[in-house]
Amino acid sequence: MLREEKERLVAELTERLRTSETLIVADYRGLTVTDIDKLRSDLLAHGARFSVVKNTLTRRAAEAAGTTELLALLEGPTAIAFLENEGDPVAVAKALNDAARAQVLSIKGGVLEGTTMTAEAVKELASLPPVDTIRAQIAGAILSPLTTVVMLLSAPLQDLAGLIDARIRQLEEQGDTSAAEAEPAAEAPAEEPAAEGPAAEDAEETRPESTEPTEEQEES
Image (cartoon, rainbow, N blue to C red):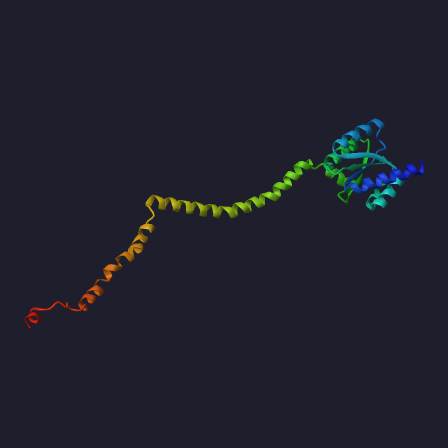
């Protein structure tokens, strides 16, 4: 292999290692070319690219990408399933685990979102439910307590609103007397002239006598 070709492959592997937080490494020595093509197609459907790699070039790429935890897995014939951003790690692990059961390859380990996985950990990953099911279960576990809290908080408010509505209906049926009780107070100023009666009498008592001449004055 020419040096330029090697540099190109190292650069491609480096980029894949940098962009793939999850990958699974396997020993492919039992796979035929037809098996590899079929497995590659199956894994691609689950969002992973399956590539047979050279250990020497992959070590250089791993060091350049900073994924040194991968170095311990680069022994013997090596193939790597690189998961894309939307890849399903559970489905990929299941596909590789099925191939391992058929004894056409053996799983070495892998990296799951930056955490190193052993071969046993990959098998355990393969035994999990699909990712969509796991997400639904996690979402349910998170939302369930929140829903309970919301119900507990909103129930007293709903009861209070019901009591207020019931009281309003009761007042409407019985008739609200608050307005009628307020009317006398509003009419109070109209009664004030009656209260001024004594003052008017006093004014009449102090009124000067008539200046018309009496009979005695006329005779004089």
